[in-house]
Length: 310
Image (tube, rainbow, N blue to C red; front, side):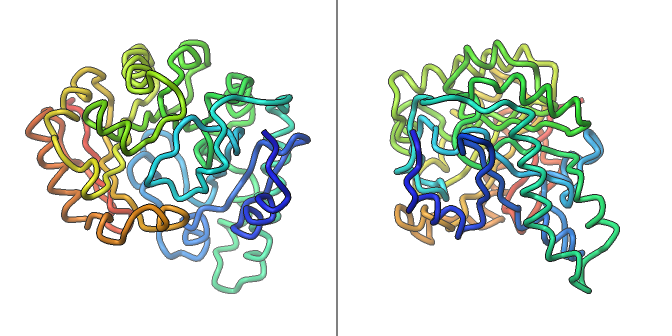
């Protein structure tokens, strides 16, 4: 699926930079990367996981190898889900080409900070060589046919690969080399809610997600379940989520509040965005259901971290 010129222009206007010969990959600077360069704070990923992986917000490469390809049209997604295609089409660029161009695009997008008197110059120098690849920007990365090679290429360059997946491709998870950290988006406590909020474009999506959760148990890397909470939609039934958590036994669980941004504003309302206190209360309910413990939080991102008992 090739994006139209109009769609490409809209993405570039929104801060995306498409990379690779076939333009199915993209980079966008995270606002927390900018904030870190300006000494205005760090993202919750660094706050939660720096001690494990040594990651820094200002050295994060937020990217995707599968920009137009995704098999869900989640109501809470900030992207234009009308661009989504559930099946890979056309040739796939090589991982080394994608990373080469992604890093160059990142440097170009950050170039203006070099002359900014408010920016930390040491951090800017370090940001020229990313230390973390958040493979999560857009689309579903497990649809990219050369994902295994992309993870390998990250390791080869001393870049920590974080992989975020919707869990609809358990067969691909069985094939790839393990990333440093694997997220599976687990955004419903039951199949009916899943179908309503994720609006899958493929059949048996709930069953495939549960298969991926079973595959996840065998991974040795850091395992995280991401729970994007949308008030009035899926912020319910902590016992249902608890059963999924107990089945997988991940290292961490992240209940995170939906943010009223981007294209999601056409599908949802401001009141669907939970407060940080509401997220904490839901986290406490999960504590009671699972035995996990809230060990950290980030109020600006409306997220809490639940950790497994040591």
